[in-house]
Amino acid sequence: MEKVFFMNEAIKLACENVLSNHGGPFGAIVIKDGEIIGKGKNEVTSSNDPTAHAEVQAIREACSYLGSFQLTDCEIYTSCEPCPMCIGAIYWARPKAVYYACTKEEAAKIGFDDHFIYEEISLPIEDRTIMMNQITVDEYNLPFKMWEVSSDKTEY
Image (cartoon, rainbow, N blue to C red; front, side):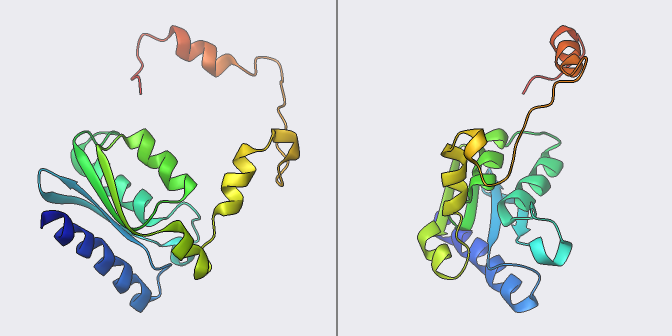
């Protein structure tokens, strides 16, 4: 019953977002110990930020609340199956579970099709639509060398 309640909360956020016209029809929440600690809605168009997806917004708020960059023992409820960017953010945040309502196929039917991103990721770099080339200037890897020997780093 608790999962149904939380899913309805994520869907409610998505519906509110449609009515307010602040972004796409997506909402997400982060739960820890039965409490909502982060909420997010899609604000891509209202903030001119392509990373302002509901899941990312909810993760940011929850991490701020926890004072941590990880969502240990948390769950994410989202109104739609996460896109590739959000999946990446979710894996970096490391919650214990993600629950979603609509599928990526249902999202594609209303104009939110991320299938091309999955295809692009699987291509060799030289075959991708957006050109990606490495430039190796002198000391290009200095930040990595510095990180490797630093005694004052937080692993993640």
